[in-house]
Amino acid sequence: MVQRFRKKVRKQRGSMHHGYGIQKGHKKAGSRGGVGKAGGTRHEWMHSIVIGKKYGKHGFVRPPRATTPQKSINVGEISERIDYFVKKGFATRVGRDITIDTTKMGVTKVLGKGPTSKMTVIAESFSESAKEKIKKAGGSAKVAKK
Picture 1 (cartoon, one colour):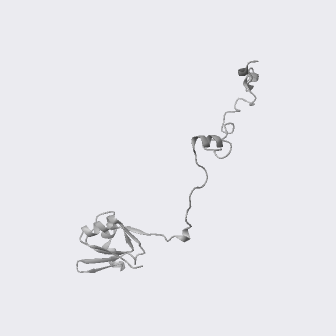
Picture 2: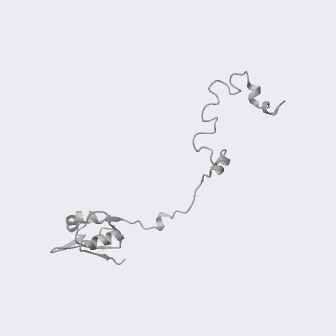
Picture 3: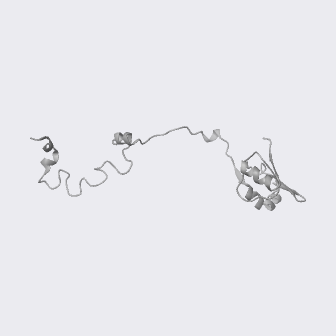
């Protein structure tokens, strides 16, 4: 017999369901090995290798206890809430000069989003844009000693 006729489907011709029971058999996810990425590390592994998928964990994540959480605030938010900070004791106002100490608030970094006014800001670190904005407004950015 010719090679192309040695397939199981040839034996199944004439049977209605080709060995899969009722009409619904061989249609759903179970018969195709799952839906989506199912079996990518097991029964579909060769397909995963061919298309170049990466499975499993990659890289290293530092444990939370090894890092100190950084809290940041934007320059725009500082200039909007100056009165509140003076009232809380985070800022001092002498005439028109305003000095804001973000270390008292528990903030470690000042970022440069938003409009700013003339003021002196003391923080552990500043972004480059924050330094520029504060200096353009006529204020100064001082780095606090840890």
